[in-house]
Image 1 (cartoon, rainbow, N blue to C red):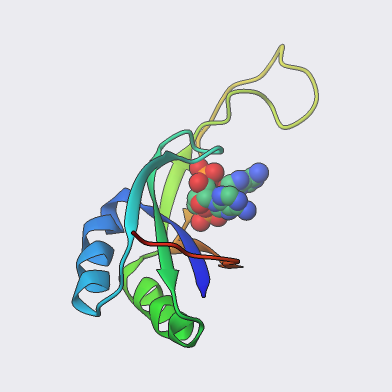
Image 2 (image 1 turned 180 degrees about the vertical axis):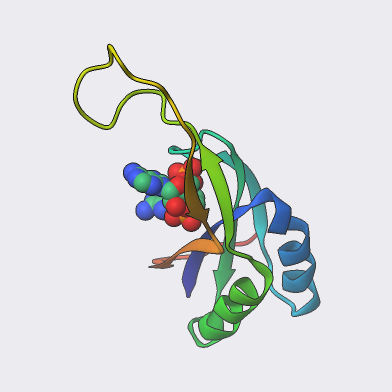
Length: 109
Ligand code: 2BA
């Protein structure tokens, strides 16, 4: 068994959730916050048999879009802050950051 942890953008979470249910995957959704953007995102935890991992990765890939997001750095990347004028930089977010981990034991009562 594997545990798939997928961090996705909030905008994709309902679509992904519906697609997982439709294809018979069990999942838990957690509200989370990205460390870099400090903005809300959604973390899915999905317990899955080893042989279905490629299938669940496909569902995640097909339901999570890459988006550009503007972020204004709070401090200069280097040098002094005296003459620092913050201006927004564009970062590419997602589709999804996915971790696949082995599960030693799963109990369900
Ligand atoms: P955030 O940490 O808010 O990051 C949002 C996006 O900002 C990232 O998109 C990436 O494009 C950029 N970014 C993050 N850290 C950066 C840095 N130190 N320098 C420059 N740009 C940076 P994604 O890579 O698609 O990540 C989306 C969200 O997935 C992240 O939100 C975080 O919540 C999660 N995530 C990504 N990689 C992770 C990892 N290795 N461990 C834990 N969570 C991760």
